[in-house]
Image (cartoon, rainbow, N blue to C red; front, side, top):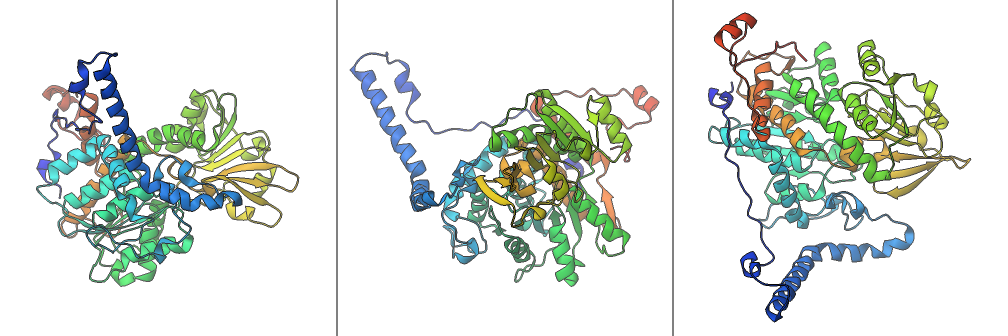
Length: 533
């Protein structure tokens, strides 16, 4: 059970301020005039200090750049060009072959380069500033330690925002072991920062499929550590434990799943009678679907496409496959920048919504030869097949915003007659024998987390929902949750939203007793029925 203390929403106007190091004292320079020897010496001193600082900050990176310089003649793309140092690769060696240890002697981890931990810590600190709800939950529940005794296996994207969630869970009493749910989305320096803080992290950008499953297995099968909770994004940790360690799986107290794909897997397990533990479907909670899926994708799709291709959206023919919340966010963003957006849908309700939003609903085959940008957002498989890809126009950009990497049949493009040409990190030309080429982003995996970043504030909403779901399942009395898939209670959805309102200086209107009676509601909520989505 969640304590009443955690659900007592109160506006917290106390804001923390960061003290940033200054290159030199502002007070000293405040009264100096532009001319004169004294001002000249001060400016010169400031410049020297700035140069020295720059040298210290870049010293680590320069060594690795020098080591890679010999690769330039072979056409190797320097992945430092991506949006953070997360894709920085000192060498081509597999981290599994390295013996690394932290400054405290901790060795139970596998990341790209532990020496980049300081950079990751700065990324995490930036994310904390944009995750007010999750930080508020941390402050309110830290003394209660509602996750004391929880041993959580996490398999999610490992980004600065996820690091804030991980450190919140630890502050609430949990111990964790964590792997990545996507081989391209890990921010290497963030993984290093978590490992430096003595947390077992097994993830790096650019894992192979074998590395991916090895990393999850290292989290599950750890000597002297029996997991009792799973936080999953896609169902891979759940799948591996169920298949490989069934006895261990039966001892789990609960699973929290946040993706369409993972939730679909859970419902399949439940229907077949193979789900032996309770699970919480976070994906269909209002605070996930209506915020992360919509608002996050509305911003991050533009970010990913711009960073990877420098494309101009105005006048481009765009096809969005699927008009759920992700498709709605992508469509709104691209339409706002002047793109001509078409939509494919199987659901007549979503199709009608697309029509009412001003989009033309078509079949893929009807427009395949005319589109400039193709985006999948369905969570299904084989949405775009080799036959479709063969008919795309020269220069078409192809990417996926759904969770799974099965929406685009990328495997069918790895044939002798087609040439793959690496352009930059996560960007490939695929060239047909007649010279036609398409631009494939992130090899068909989740493009926003593979090629750009996502808004920390929206992730705060989802992460807070995940944390509350873990607390609820872990503390629930025996028998409250059976071997089935559950939705988060609406009261928790509303509590998550309330934690984020002070950021906007938002003030809720309170119902009078007469109004509450008229509507049949409690004045404190919940204000929507549990079936509301």
